[in-house]
Amino acid sequence: MTTRDERKLPKGGDDRLRQPTAALAAMGLEAEFSVVLDGEPVKPEDVFRSPRHIVRGPMMHRTGRSYHMPTGGAVYFDTGVIEIATPIIEIDKGCAARAGRSLWESIRFLRAELDAWEERRDHTVQLAGFSTHYNVSFDLPESERGASRTVEKLALLLTHVLAMPVMLLAANRRSTGVGVRPRGNRIEITADFTPDAALMIATATVIVGVAREVMRWPSFELDALDAHDFPRVRRFTPEPHSSRKGWVARFSSFTENPFMADVNAPVWGTDGGDTLSLRRIAARITRYFWPSISRLGDDRSLRLISAVMDGRAPSLLELEDRPPSYDSVGRLCTWANLFPVRALPRSKYERVFIRAISGRKLQLARDLYTPTGMRGWSHVVFRRDRDKTRHVFSLDFLLRHLDAWDVGPKAERRIGRTLRERLERREKGG
Image 1 (cartoon, one colour):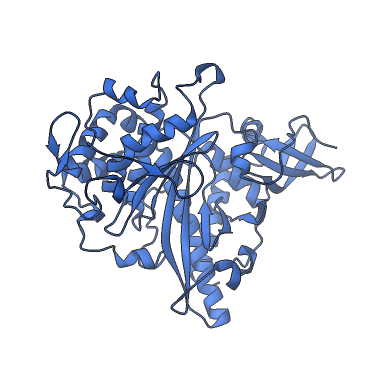
Image 2 (tube, one colour; image 1 turned 90 degrees about the vertical axis):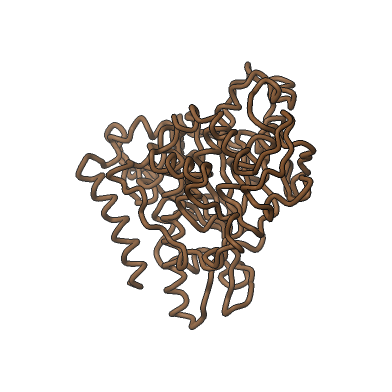
C-alpha cells in the first residue's frame, strides 16, 4: 500500500536527472576527494568498501551505494574518489551560502569519522581536494523551450560567460579548465576543489546569479552574446568535456594558459577591440550580472566577490603554487562556521532532509509515519506506524506539512543542538 503522493521512479542512472524534480528552483554542491592512505594514493572502495565502514553511527540510505549523513549531505564512492553532495537548496537570497555551509559541515563530519577510523586501524588518511560541481536547476517550462533554448545550448553559452569569473574565484595555478555540463533538469559547472570555504561560496554565488539570469535570455545561441555589453576573449574555443556531454574552457582553449598568466596583465584581446587582464574581464562580466548576483547573494560573499574582482583580495591564481591545504581537506582547511544558523536559517528543503535523517516522526491526520530512507533527492520513504505499510512523499508535499513533523520552536532548536553535539562528539573522537 502506498500514499497518493507516491511516484514510480526509474531504476539506475542519475536519479536527479531522470526522476520527477522538486517544484522550487534549486541548487546544490558536490565535492570530490582523492584518498591518500599512509602517503599513497588509493581508491576508497578498495580500502573502505562502503561509506558505512567509515561512519560509526547509522546512516539513511539514499540510492544505490550512497548514504545520507546526519548533516543532510550524502556520501558515496565514485570511480576512485569520495564524493559528498549537499541536499538540494531552493534558490533564494543566501542560497549559495546555505549550500556551502551544508557541504563544509559534511566535510567536517566525514573528516572526524576518518580520524576515528585512523585510530582504530592505525593508519593515516588524507582527503585531497579533487573537484567541485556547482549545480543549478534548469526549470524552464516546456512552452518556453525550443530549438534555440535547450539545456545543451545553455551549457555552451555559459562556458563563454562563466569561464573567467570562475577562474579568478575558484581556480589555482595547477588548474586545467572550467567545465559546463547539461544534465537534463540542471546545469552543472565543474572546477577544481577550492580549499577555502568563503571563496567556494563566493564562486557559487556568482554561478547561480549568472546562470539564472542567462536562463531568462530569449535565445541560448552564441550570437545572443552580441546583445550584451561585456568582454569576450578573442580566439577562445571551448573543448568537449572529458566526461559526459558538455564543454570545457581548458588552458588549451586560449592563446596562452590563463591559469599560469598574470591575472593583472592586459594580455587578452577581446571582441570589442580592447586588450584586458583576466581580472578586468572577470570583473566586467560580474558587474554586468551584478543585479542578479546581488539579489541571490549574501552580504559577506558579495563583499568578497567585489574585493577579489577589484584586486583588494587575492585570487588563488596569484599564489606561486596551489596551496598545501588542497591536499589536506578537513585539517589544513576546515569549516569555521562563517554562516551560523541563527544568522542564516536553513533552507526549507534542508529542514525536510534533516528531519527525515534524524528519524523524527511525521503526523498526518491521526497517523504517525517514520522516515526510513530516501528515493534520490526529491522523495522520502516512510513506514506508517499503524500498519507498517510503506509510503513515499515528495519534498514539496512534505514542505506543506513541516509544522506537523514533530516540530515547533523548541523542537527546531533541539534538532540543531543534536546536530551540533554530534559534530562536536565526532571531532573529539567520542
